[in-house]
Length: 507
Image (cartoon, rainbow, N blue to C red):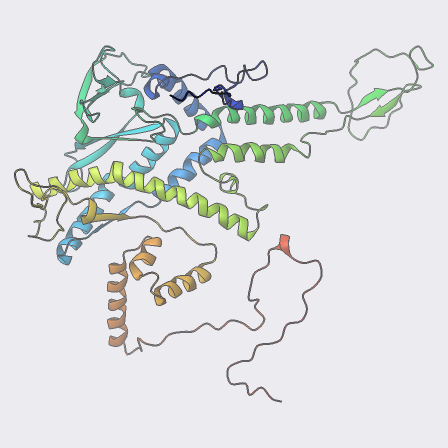
């Protein structure tokens, strides 16, 4: 029997992280860190306080108001446009036309912008899908925004409910409890509630943590920064006003008890315009220099606004509406990252707001006979029938593969370059007309139909439809752009002239 003797006893290694250490220097910084759950940290009182402060800041701060309006206008724009993807072109045209007319009747674009602004300021946007008999459209489906304060539980001890939202055992929302009056109304509050099924309630918010049931204002991290910006601006203004309040001061270089005519300290002398006067013996006339705002004033504000915009994924030049300190490349790069975040927000709006609304509108349009659904016009859905393994086409939903929405295109700072790049992608088969039109917020079928109409009209008028105008680049035009900030100190060397078409190359 062989016995082994461990000459090196086992040692327990305790790996340490600097961020996990609590010292006398960082104890105050991490004092408010907790291990609460998502809903435990977002209690109704905390969300109410944050909502009130966010609304106050947006209502009184020009930068906060501009941030909210810019995000809402860029995300929603002129509103989404429906494109149906069934195999029946005539049916697609009817549904798209009727949906556009209904969207104009309910002012859908304005409602969506309101929901987007509420999502930023309140942290969540609620809207009820209901029937409006006075709507000027055969489909009487309407959408009505509801403030987050009205979504609350009738009584606190509700099982499977989180502040006005009741869930099933699988975590799906079932009912929303809506107060008949706003808690902040000055009139009498009766405390009556109405329950709305989740099928007819839109709840749009950003899910920051797993298990989060209610939304948090998106500008929450920027609220202290807005307060600092306001305090700094007021302090600079007060210093400038203080310096401007003193027209002149009298001072002397003589020491204390020196040879100077005695004067009453802090005495005030009224001055008249264009008046010549004499000063007491030993005294001089001087003015307080107005040193506010100093040279770092604008830089400090720009840094604060850049930090504010970062939590909303909005660059500082868009937040300020000023790109004077950006060159072409940096300004375009900042816009690209901003537009990517807008695309994600538009996708979220489609999934949470537009598709449920389109489902309700489509079911009501079929019920009243506004149009008939064609047979086998839609692709097969992924929902299997009960008791069989075959796929079944859903006759009550046109979402998913059956429909999509187009948004306004993002304008390019150099349309000519972007048009040439799009043409190159289509010619090299790395893209197609549908993709390029979607970037511009257009439907490729509408573009082709309009092109066909214009061609027929040109033939009828005796015009050549195949005639194209080719814009040649001017000989003196540069092949590339140079930003003023990147321009060389010395002039460029002379460049060889390009030959024009038809030149022989000789003299």
